[in-house]
Length: 329
Ligand code: KG4
Ligand code: ZN
Image (spheres, helix red, strand yellow):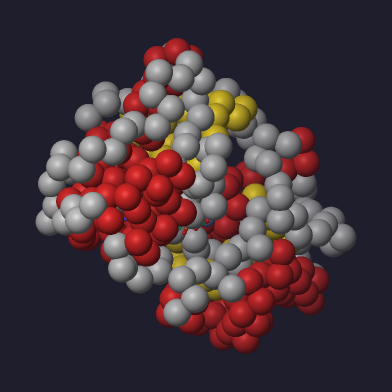
């Protein structure tokens, strides 16, 4: 099966090609620079830019994969969740391409795609836990069987990546702030600035990061060194994610955890998780942030267990819970 996958859920035009679960090409046209001067993504600009470059990015991905359009067996695109304008560009393109080629298409859930990036090459069978930490989501799922996602907890306010981006901005770093903040943190003392662990003592598995953002603003005003704020903030965010997942794993008796989404690229997060004794599945760093290959991988895994194409009328879904019944349409 040669599959083309497209992700235009937010600000990057991602197109990947896989054969089975082997990634043949993964091309991401980043819009970060365009949005940087606004300090975040401007949806209408993102849509226009996707529409402008998508044909070129698809051509480049096929060229790098060494396959022609005639070799494709399936076209997949992120259906949601995400920004509706950007989603529509990728979705319409995928449907049009598949329809024109006379091959099936699949609408893919963005979070399932993030998970697929971490498990495609892995020897992983449910049950396991799945933590998704990106710019838009911080969700912890229990996956008791293939394709079933039970939401255990989620952020009550900002997503983990969003908190990284906002605190990075406070520290004068460019968007997207996650990688920049992590780099600055390397030079700081993670115990210097007194952030408190959010939702300490809760019995559930929720997250909350907006308080850390407010605290960071106060610490900036108080004159703490920027590198120390970055390092201490990063430590507490990572601590919150790791301890919550570990507690869920113990309570449910789960031994394996998939950690996916843009924040899974964070090195401290990987290090701290590796110290928990859990069996861990991370995406390769280049597949951690939004890309098209993960969409193709999710389509590939789904097609293996259920080769039913999506209907041509399937629409973009800006809000689409992964545990909703229709998430697998
Ligand atoms: O999954 P993703 O590419 O897009 C969404 O679906 O949201 O995640 C992007 C998020 C951004 O907030 C970015 O700052 C964060 O992931 N991120 C990181 C790192 N790399 C990306 N956060 C912390 N450390 C990193 N190394
Ligand atoms: Zn994402």
